[in-house]
Image (cartoon, rainbow, N blue to C red):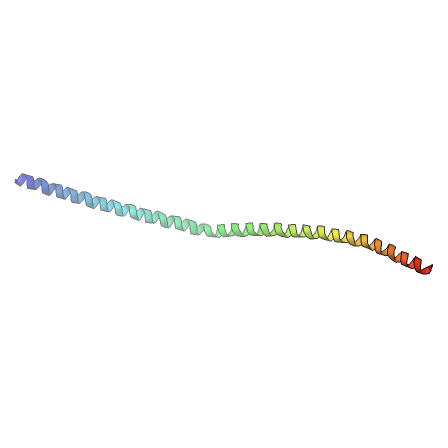
Length: 105
């Protein structure tokens, strides 16, 4: 019976040692994961200025494209209006000339 109790005590000691090792390993894994998470967060924070700069550059490109498109539309519209004005100018001169000619008759 003493031998059985001794084996049970030895088994209990081994089980407790295994449990302590498992807890230590668990704590080590948790600390490693926290450390990795902090490192990833630091990497992300370091990239924020580049991300911000990239976003601003893309926004400026889109703004420049929009301005260029608006200028092109403005130029097209200006040319159209100028052509229409020139056409109406010729018609107005002809009408005025006809009025002058018919008034003299």
